[in-house]
Amino acid sequence: DGGITQSPKYLFRKEGQNVTLSCEQNLNHDAMYWYRQDPGQGLRLIYYSQIVNDFQKGDIAEGYSVSREKKESFPLTVTSAQKNPTAFYLCASKEQAGRETQYFGPGTRLLVL
Amino acid sequence: SQKIEQNSEALNIQEGKTATLTCNYTNYSPAYLQWYRQDPGRGPVFLLLIRENEKEKRKERLKVTFDTTLKQSLFHITASQPADSATYLCASQTGANNLFFGTGTRLTVIP
Image (cartoon, rainbow over all chains, first blue to last red; front, side, top):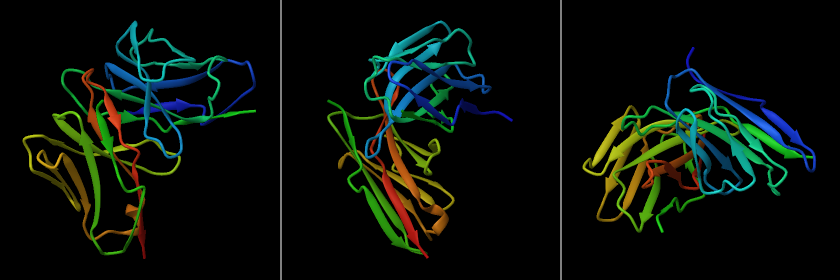
């Protein structure tokens, strides 16, 4: 059963804490993406990776970090430097070689305690 | 800067009618536009892609048009059903071959 999984579904962060959101895909896609979604706003790109061991900042990368050590995995760390982390986080993947459609995971909702 | 706008935040429509959602773009000429459906608390799901040289694309009860003169895409759902109630997102590519998204239109189909 191919697809993208994100865990956990809900995540709570305390002040000053780093938290890591998991994203795994078994679609054999080259590119992976992290978006943040806030009420009334569109999806905003945080980071993306088009190939293993390489990633690029998106529009709102400050306070976040990523790694891409394996093709199927693209974890996102929300650091303590991100002052307003409460949001719905979406991971997506895409074949390369000219494909345009992105496939999304179910999302992780991050809440601050 | 490149901009994509979905002017209607919400749209209510009676079951059986055709729902029409609008996506406008400014300051660039996209090679294609995509439409996604998003249910509450879930990730978006791809529906249709239309390229700049295509006037219209259909898939079952869905139809998308692309008017490069008006800089607009229209998304139609014919014979709408309550199960069509969701938020619909328009998306377009950036120069870096990534997508950027409109804020979405929340469609409610009333039985």
